[in-house]
Image 1 (tube, rainbow, N blue to C red):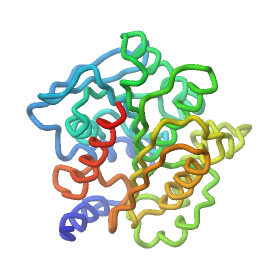
Image 2 (cartoon, one colour; image 1 turned 30 degrees about the vertical axis):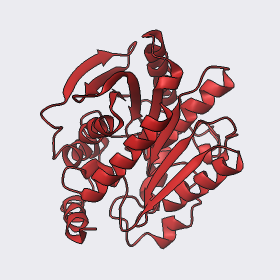
Image 3 (cartoon, rainbow, N blue to C red; image 1 turned 90 degrees about the vertical axis):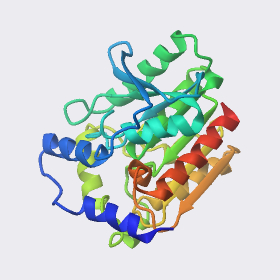
Image 4 (tube, rainbow, N blue to C red; image 1 turned 180 degrees about the vertical axis):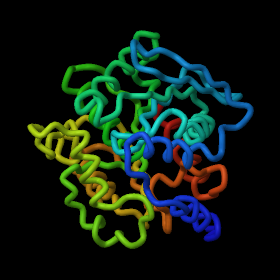
Length: 294
């Protein structure tokens, strides 16, 4: 591993203090996430997913009948198609698939269950376009990873067909914040800290919602029947335990689970794949996984 690359990303992330207001936080994530734009050969097309904004992308040589539907991270309060465009488009290239990025509504303006309702709307749009469920991979990073699992569980509970596979990067699976690495990795993670997560959860969840509700904390869900799932997480992030405990939980539910722990990597490191070789390799692994099951 090139240690200088991850050091440079860390420097980028720590170059300024975390903004205070929601608008400023969203602007900052868009800025650091999109510092490297998508490749010139990627085709981008905005789409209305039945009232939810989305964006199609496809790289040359991809199979348009295979779709990766992706939910961005940002703690349910920030993140966008822009912030994750480079990651999503390169994941599509690796998977040789079209991608559909979903701009679900954000808290605190739109608290739970707005994001989950928008994810459902995006899925219905895709299925109504004639895309077979088994030709769809659902992916997400951080909060988007939790949202991806919540959507799959909702589909299963409704008796709907579920996607061919799931891909989760640094997933936030426990909004009770009980994972031990929130403490043990506090000093090494430049992005995610327990106090910040508590603030995000407070903004996302109405007071009456139990933080163990499986629709917001999939770690506590009935996980039987999930499709094959790839979980990728960095060893230097506070949400490491969210990923490892979730991998153990779905494995115990007889779900085919693949867990990758990437040494020295930080939260959602594939975002910076343009300048981070470990990010490109992680996307290559995810692409191969998606091609196997979709």
